Image (cartoon, rainbow, N blue to C red):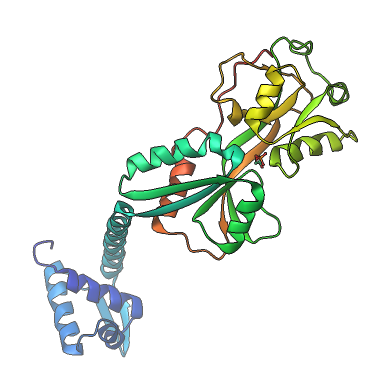
Length: 306
Ligand code: PGA
């Protein structure tokens, strides 16, 4: 059968099987009726059994015809998938990927982007790291392909995909009196001097919410505008704070004590976000698939003194 059957014949047969009509099949394929009939005759001769029965004006597939219809659809499905994957790879040979990340995401976003850029060297990648306000403004203006955030916006219609865990841990200097204590309560922790990120920081909101759930308000001793400044202040013995475990990736194990506190770590996620109306480019879709498929989603435990 393979030597004599043409794709054209299979295509004609599939259309007749689907539409139950020679006339409509010929219209769909822009062929004349005699051509369709002749090709069907040749196909039937090659296969050697009847594929179609005509009862009055109605067309029916014989059981052998039904089997061939299934096989034909499978073959076409495989070919369609192949054609699509070639087109995608062509699309990934060049193109642009514009990302924007909230500051704390800068601890992992460049690494992921670097790995992706090595896989697809023809793609021109850019990453802007900025504060939440500007990220939200850019989402609203639909400027970039994807955004990394710790909390999807409530007031903009977006598609948000969790891509990674984002645990928030309480840190103190290694020689802090609470460093080796077990199961500390939030009440006890609230008595410590707290170092807090600026207002509007997702980390700060998460910490304040966790305390507020227990009716506790913490008054920051100091407000600092970045995770690095918070970490320096902790090491200088100015107080304690809580940061994303991702913010510890560049630190030596044991450089900080991770306190054992009820209700911590706070389990959050990182999200890749894009405006709901946006059609993702082939490149952006490939990057999102890459984020979902190819890396460990839990940051390594820091060298802790728990
Ligand atoms: P941030 O981090 O604290 O830098 O705003 C983002 C987030 O965790 O939501």
